[in-house]
Figure 1 (cartoon, helix red, strand yellow):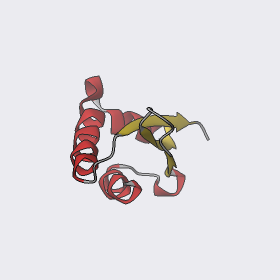
Figure 2 (tube, rainbow, N blue to C red; figure 1 turned 180 degrees about the horizontal axis):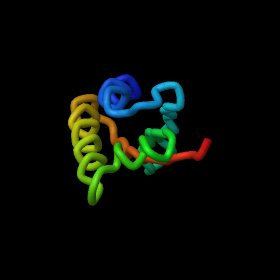
Figure 3 (cartoon, one colour; figure 1 turned 120 degrees about the vertical axis):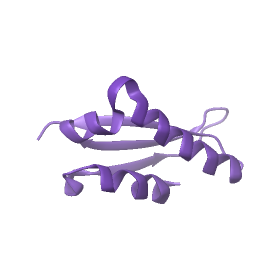
Figure 4 (cartoon, one colour; figure 1 turned 90 degrees about the vertical axis):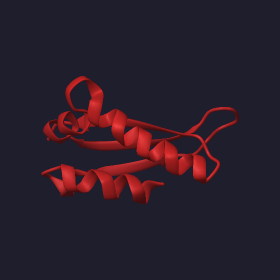
Length: 81
């Protein structure tokens, strides 16, 4: 799942060296989480106006997750350098 997120996100950001994608495994009834961490400007670009880009990324990941019969949440975080 991390691979598909990286393939979607990398072309959209300017600072590829600062990109980190972490997967937190599912626990009991909670879904797995994929956390995308990038610098502040890239995170803003990934979220988009009104969250439109983030929602599109989540939709693509959810389709792949359904095909794999898993439940995944995608979160976006930033850090300042």
